[in-house]
Image (cartoon, rainbow over all chains, first blue to last red; front, top):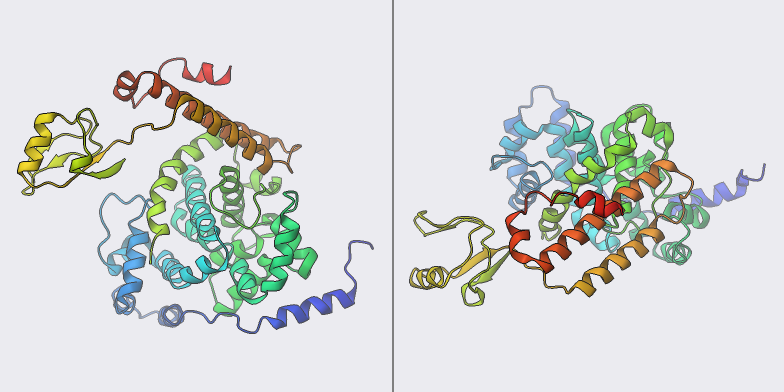
Length: 284
Length: 132
């Protein structure tokens, strides 16, 4: 079997993964919120009060809640209002994003822009498909490449090798990761999602956005993030490590029931959002 | 659109947002052109900035050069997927939008007044000329 990596290689790869000792800890506030909601008696107001205690974090979350992402006609002025309007999972996703924002920005130039672009594109595809969970899918798009952040922060030398391989413009980032490390950012994303106890609507797109046909728990959400990743790369917005448009999973495409003529309305929804999202890029 | 200080504003620029006095009274509507009179009034009221529509600062040659560079980058991004018809459709759509944008920009440079008046709808036949 030529494609089967030798057992020794796999063992070596596992060792590489173990070298990533400082897997970032789940942001304290996210862990607290998760614990709170495990208790069915917790009210939205209580969760809102917890988040509101951190004023910087609240400001960041409200800025995202009021951004072109969600296109709200009225201003969301408090966390508890955001919880009511956007729902609990979305606000939790925004809290998580705000907490890891610095990490994403420091790890790789252009990755934050790629992330918000993919989020907006996920929202646009979900909107076109008439999904009522468009906001949650958007947050999945926002966090889909978190594995790359962990890699960049923990294995800088290997990441330089990956960058060298990608430079010729013919190799995708995850292919180069697999060549150098024998695993890629999507597997690390899975690990991180487990470690942080993230919901499947975030975990599965993180793990399977390059192989959406394998998704079982959130197949549609994963498929939408897969298509959104392709659309935002086609636009050349941000930088996901390479500048190539990856192949589309036909199984995912067909499952969503998308047509080729849908690209125009999707891009029409996306375009005005992207230009105004430059504002959130400058969050500090 | 962009916000500029009042001393950089000149007659003929188009307001991208309505202009109100500090107490909320409307001074000039969105889409109206700045006049000498309006500028004098703003100076008296201590209004120090206005939001105007951005003008096209590129020349025809620069717009064409930007478009050429865009298509080059687009080809490079899609180098891997030639056989996939879905992705070819995506590439075609990206190209169509860029051509439309190029043609609208060129129209704005050649005829600034009529182009800004009809901003909501592209002129008839724009789609055909894009595909030609």
